[in-house]
Length: 417
Ligand code: UD1
Image 1 (cartoon, rainbow, N blue to C red):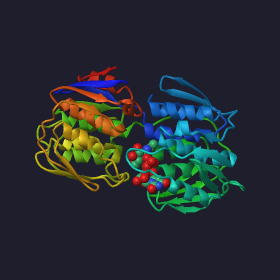
Image 2 (tube, rainbow, N blue to C red):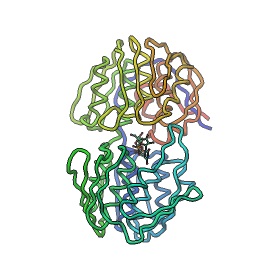
Image 3 (cartoon, rainbow, N blue to C red):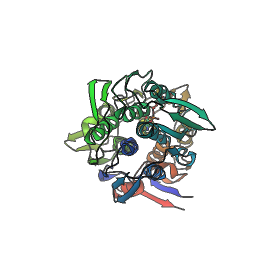
Image 4 (tube, protein in one colour):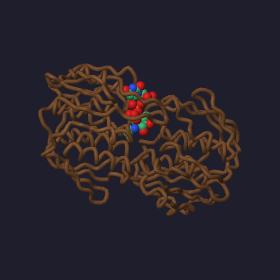
């Protein structure tokens, strides 16, 4: 099994080009199922979750071909409606094919996503909302068996809780429903706006009515298109935090800084110097990091996907900090590993209290989920000596060329067997 060897503590320097967004690519890939025309997606990150989604599309009959970061998709003979456990178990976003399959064929059998280290992650909000469009479903032997006997029909839907995936599934499904759908209390993550832009480009009729309200007028069929995926704001945030945590100077490139305003403001507040230009952010890490209180929240709040990375940075603060995890109930798996490296973090329910002035010590470590894994890299970059990170297959799910990007900015990091 592959591991990462990280030798710290060295400063980082240079530029990082941010890849296309994994979390924008996944729903857009699922949405390509709506079309029978050729679609070309550009700026896809070559990470394992994207490969898994592409396998899933192929298992449903799509023909696909990668050229670097571009993917050509042709669905003219696509006819299968079955998403197997083997493909959905490793990646919860597999549930996103349910909406498009129901919209296109009126029935689908999709595996329930497997258990997940960061929480129970149910799909009840997806199913309840789809039933409002006329979907009948039953769950048996780990599969959702769903049909829309009279086809999907537009309706008014209020999401009881803000959910990124449920908002995406419903936008895609309602795009081919008869009549108009109004979705309220939607998630407004930038990746959802990217999905809407893509769908409108292939001929859907989707409008934002207000901040969390979307109107979708169903269309009978959609076209092909070429579309370029937005940048990965979580990857951008990870490298910004890496710079702040190692007192380094970095330029984070190929991004839209206005999308990551919340993260930039927090980094400024705790002491980093930041210069923003059109497609780039320059960060100068500071020796003095101020303590703070942060809670994760749906966009535009601070993202749960940067919580573990931010915790490493706050271990370097002058005093005690606090992070409240408001999205997932079990997303502190990195804490015990960070504490083994000398951090002093205690957990009380969904609140982590982080003592500052930590001098990280190198150690052999175990990665537990995607974002927790990268937080261990950040801590290891800070610790003098050699750290080994096991189970890095989690990292490969979502960070493109991670060790190459870190090597390019001077980190002593390599993959070993
Ligand atoms: C997406 C992101 C993930 C990010 C998360 C929150 C992708 C592929 N993944 O995940 O990286 O961490 O948003 O920003 O884009 N919930 C229910 N019932 C449901 C659906 C969700 O109770 O049917 C709960 C979840 O358990 C969680 C909360 O709602 O507590 C938010 O989850 P959701 O926004 O749906 O996250 P995902 O779409 O799975």
